[in-house]
Length: 336
Image (tube, rainbow, N blue to C red; front, side, top):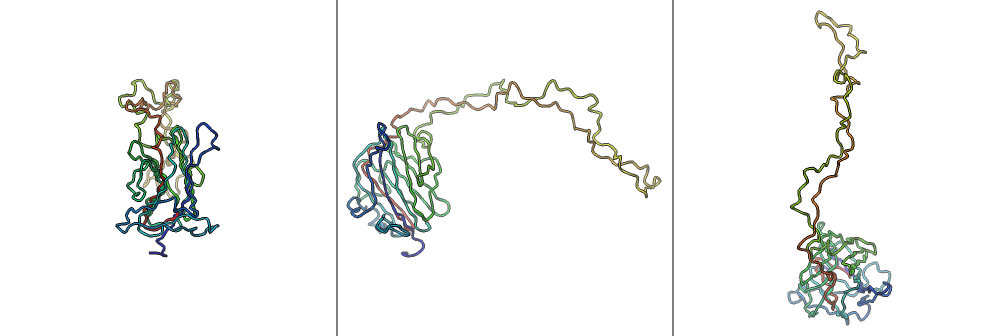
């Protein structure tokens, strides 16, 4: 299918660094940076995952379409309907007491039929020649596009060997421009997601992943107090119905009406003017409303401490990172 519109390009620039809590963030330490310049193959190991099945694709080193600098290159997933996996070993590090920042750029050079391209941070020993979709990871971050229904930005974190996807529905970019994705994880377990250096989402691992039980739960045993008054307005007990109010008719004769010239009393009976709505009639009398001095608002089930919640101050701490991986499945091609 080479050269056909089914192809798509994905081009990567990757940066991984940490901010120490003890120093100004300008003194951050870069643990891994990849611009895919000459010599990049010596840093990366192409996996043989799916190769025996004939389903493994190859990467192309290219600047891609519309490049402002032909020497500014990335790697492109070049074959359609293939799986791609490549990884680089990096100096082992921990994000304990530090802010972790993962950044990379991706470019989809044409319309995507179906495909996903993910950055993965890997812990422990990894046989890089066998790295693939089933290799355990600590972080998975990247877009997944398939048809008109799926346009998702995945963010999955591993905790005690189990993977937890973010609960929020994150949308990825789908145009043909280069986009810069950033994931920031802080020691207070807060996080931010930036797209093109603009915050797209933020929150906390405590609330946006189902890793730990919630701190607070609704008290299912609570009942609304019998004397709870949720009426915001009440009838004014001091309001009195005006004298003669009930005597006011709803309709009155139309004084402007005239007997028709051809009216025949012998045939038509005595003429009477038609009725019209009485402007003085206000309907059935009701007391006016006043603010209820005993109003307590709408009753809501109270929140209580969750007895099953057990805090983990190291919730944000990943297993020591030793590898960076790129794992892609596509119907048509990408460029990193």
